[in-house]
Image 1: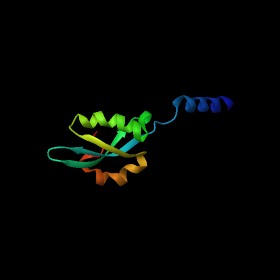
Image 2: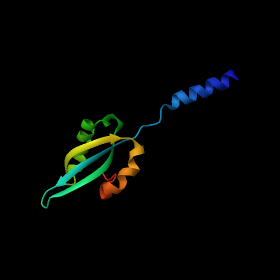
Image 3: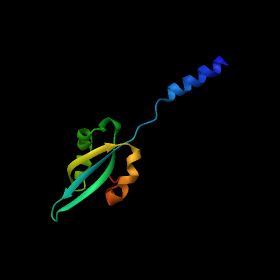
Image 4: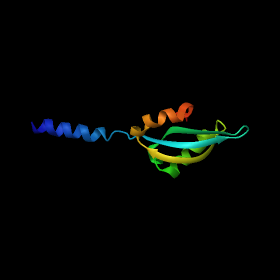
Length: 94
């Protein structure tokens, strides 16, 4: 019985914690003509602060001609559904 308990505990310890998910919502713009948009993107767990998320998102967005104006917040998967409609075409695109 002790072997079973030890084996189960070891298996759980080696599995490690489940990967956390981090998302950021942001505002961007394009010029000529001026276009403003709201979006939501996944960012790496290491960049799950507003400042770090901005550093990760700015180059991704710039690749398609967007200029990052601001990262509004970072959040977990529990905040995705409430932001989906507002983000429209920029929901998890970048």
